[in-house]
Image (cartoon, rainbow, N blue to C red):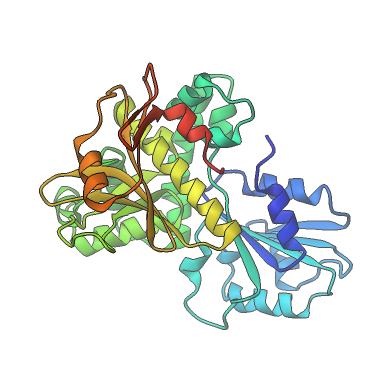
Length: 372
């Protein structure tokens, strides 16, 4: 399946370096190689490949290479200064594409800055908006399997289960240890397992620490590692221009909806979360507007699932329901109190309608309308 971002990435390559980041096995290498098919004299080098590693270290690719693809380069010591030198001395017509399954921002701790030398594109799992001629069956498939290419496109459920088992094991035993030396292997695995069961609920580091048997700061660090590797993402409470009484505890969601342990309603909320994140990433990466996914929740328990913001300004509230078409009381409360645009999305909805200024619509139509 051709990814929507391919043409935009190709356009940006003519201007600067391009970084493609995103979860493991989300399709970064595939999109890079697809772009290379349309560029003569392209070379693909993966730092995990020992033969490629020598070529990278010695910068011994052919000088006439038109497109240079460097995969997993962040695993190279002092990769940033290396890349700066390669970019600053490359032939004028040479394009450079860098991919990686960890947040490159997380590694920017020393050396010269790459500021002004690259564009970033975040590749996320498939969404309804990206699937050509998508239908309700595709929505159910995303709920059951998640949007990662291999499980989503698999012919058999057994292959999906095998993929996910190996995927989770690889995340724990390979990616996390590559990212940072974790001494308590059991604790971070238990943290991940607990998070899979707490999707959509405010997470307390103190409560998690009691369950895992470690310090709250350790839990927070584990969550930061899982975030940096695109396994989970936090949705923080919005407070700018909103009463400071809002609860500050974050909610956790997974890039892979198939990893969520919970009922269909929880998986639906996760799917909407990752679809909204993908939509906002797309706007930010392509239009240069700062976008964030937030939640609203008071200490008294009034809560709306999601709030999108653009350039720090609230744009739209979204409440997710599996079957309940009645207007959410907290959604109405925040809408009336702060004059925020509001939409309630429902999976099993017979008739779409307006409740005053608030739209109540089908999840399928809402997700299909997103930019990416």
